Image 1 (cartoon, rainbow, N blue to C red):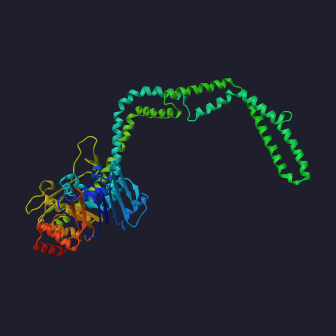
Image 2 (cartoon, rainbow, N blue to C red):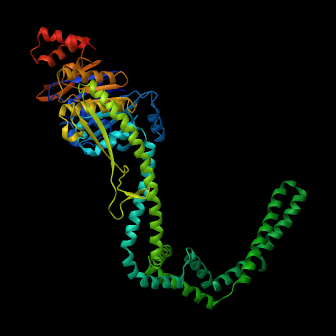
Image 3 (cartoon, rainbow, N blue to C red):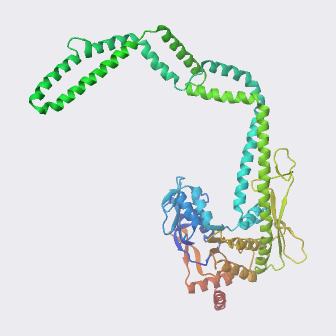
Length: 567
């Protein structure tokens, strides 16, 4: 649940800090006082995109922070662990919008992406905006309501995986067919280039080896002379290193006979003689292998020249040449075997069409089961909300495909499909006895749409999707006795979930467990919105004002007390 909301320098809000409680939290206030601004701030906190226009004039940034109790919320715990965010006793979400355009998001003081903060918000809060109920009038949203109710997300995920594979293969096949003509035109040119590169066939590390080998071959005379000189200095010349150190060893032997403290130096001298012998042996062997080979020098120079020439033509490096050869080789092979390649794609696509059809059919069966339950439960809730003679029906249809490539197959039939399957879902309703069911978008009034949305939210909430429900004027278009029924529906939800609701109706406000008022005042020539939690006496007066306007009478106060005591 949302324990506290802090908002600073956001639109008309200078600074507020609200502590919400369990159950039904009601927010009231005059039109234009800033109630919707408060909901917008909550939306920002939950991952909605923001503009610098929301920053209060004169401030450098807007700041919104929410403190949530996430006890036993395993989904949130897993998401925090997955993203290496330190768990705290409470979950703290924060958004900062800077006048410079920067947008920073934090979870438990750890910087995170907007996408992650939105994912967290989606697991905790269902925010139903003031005009969101109008989404019911768009047929394309109905399938989402049904799927939320049905709890078969594993089947939808399985379908989407196959769906994406099919879409990718269809795109690849389309690209393949589009390049067929151009490939045929380039085939002879590719053949020439392949032969030219293959006539050289440079290896990845060949160039470096050739340069090293040429350096040695081109300096063979110098290597021979210098190695002879080194061998002489070490071993053959008069007073060579070997002769000198051998004499030193003899003298150290004599010294060691007298004083054993020379033993270590004698041992090191013996090691030095062995090392000098090793060096002399290596130099002698090296010298004996040196041969001046003009033919081999020319052969390697020619090979290096050929590699440099092919490099200049095809990319500037041996690696680029090899990559280009592989690319045009694949293109040439494709041009040579175009029919076989297309046939291979079509076989894979045919198999995926069938897989996609079976996966979509699995979802359709679940949707049919879910629609029967939703029909029954929506009717029950609508009866409680003052539409007793309603009849609600979720209609699911499929369309056979007439397009050439865009279809999936099920039991040898071709169906139109989308990322959501083969079904089209539309809500039908009648609200009076004897009326035929008609599309919801065509027959429901504003007040009825609000109640239908509330009924859907009520049954969706029973599926335990969200710990917090926020309603911004869900009571639009209703009044009197019906308003009381809407209030009781919200109150019933609040027995299981934390509910925050903005309302202008006394019948709903009177049922609050916690009542807040948003007010607009002028401070130092500037308008400021503020919010405060009402005491019991203040609640009575506020509900009375909702009943009778600014002119609060003793009768309206008594009526307010009755409403509040009827909780």
